[in-house]
Length: 191
Image (cartoon, rainbow, N blue to C red; front, side, top):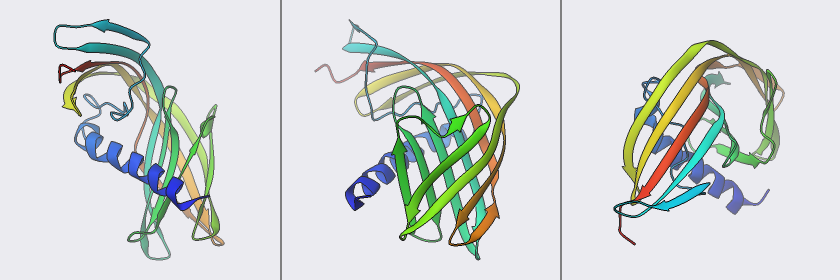
C-alpha cells in the first residue's frame, strides 16, 4: 500500500471524526454522513444555492483496547454512498487505514484487515442490530454548505477482536450503530 494512500485515508477518517465527534457523543442527534464528499442524487436550485439530497446507509463501530500496554483505537466505517474505511491506531502516531469497495460486515460477521508497520492487522467478530430505532435530526454548516440530516440509528451489539504481530486483544466497542439517513446539502456560498 502506498504511503500517500494511507495518509489520505487517515486524513479522511480524521476529518470526519473531528466534524462528527460532538454529534456522535449524543446518538439521538448524531450524523455519520461524511461531510467532505458531495454526490447528489437530486439537484435543484434553492434560495441561496444548489441543493443535493442523498440516502446514506451504513455502520459505524468505534472500539478501544490495550495492545501490549498501548492505547488502541479501531474504527469500522461503512457508507453505501462514500468510502468504507477500516482504521487502526496503536499508541501515539502509529496508525493506518484501508478503504474498500465492498465493506467489512457480511450479515453479522465483521472482517477487515490492513497492514501496519509491515504486519497484517486483522479485526474480526460480530455486530448485530439491537433495540429500536433512534430518531436522528441534525443541522450544521460545513465547508460552505448547510447540511440537514434526518433518519434513524439502531445500536449494534459488537464483539470484536484485533490481531497483530501474534497478539490478539478483545476490543470494547462503546460507539456502534447502523444508520439510515436522508442528507440534504445546500450551498451557502452563492457560487
